[in-house]
Amino acid sequence: MINALRYNMKKWDVRYLSTEISHFEFKERAKDFKTLSPGDWSVKFQEDLSRDSLIDHVKDSNNNTLWLIDYVEVYDKFYEIGGILRDLHSRLNGGVMIAAVQKNRGAKMAVGGNFTEMKPQLVVAMDWDYKNGQGIAQITKAKIIKKSHIEKDYGHPSGKQYTFEWRNGIEIKKVRWWTRAETGKEK
Image 1 (cartoon, one colour):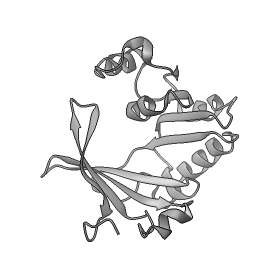
Image 2 (image 1 turned 135 degrees about the vertical axis):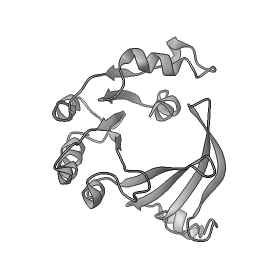
Image 3 (image 1 turned 180 degrees about the vertical axis):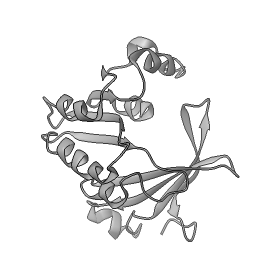
Image 4 (image 1 turned 180 degrees about the horizontal axis):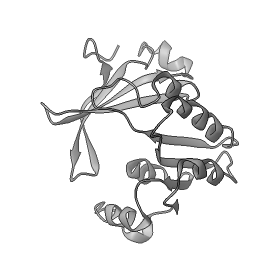
């Protein structure tokens, strides 16, 4: 999430809603980005939120607001994640939301299964390959695709994966660009 903030804070009005890390922890992690000083970070940070209060905090949104939600907590009734994401989406007013949802190791989908994919336009599942020490980000759903993407023969993005390594626990270093999981090729 901090990388999403880092790359978007100059273009968007970023709101970071956290159920996980405190503002202090956020500042400590941000210090690891050597190319940015503490004053460079442009974000409205809200911490210590419950699952129910997340929805209440998504307000005053417009088409220039980027909501980073770290993360949507669900401990029982996992099927309710679909309704939570729907309620959050209904408050965006043209804004964009990136919401993290926990996933069991090796699982294809986050807790809540198919319900996590009902409302989002794009779903990316993150996993870790312990054998090779690499992260894998796989697009499990892409709803709105530019026609030019298909016309350039890149194919539909669903099913493509990006392989990366972590640098200093914060920065992502590309290992392999977006390829098909089955073939290892771009198309």
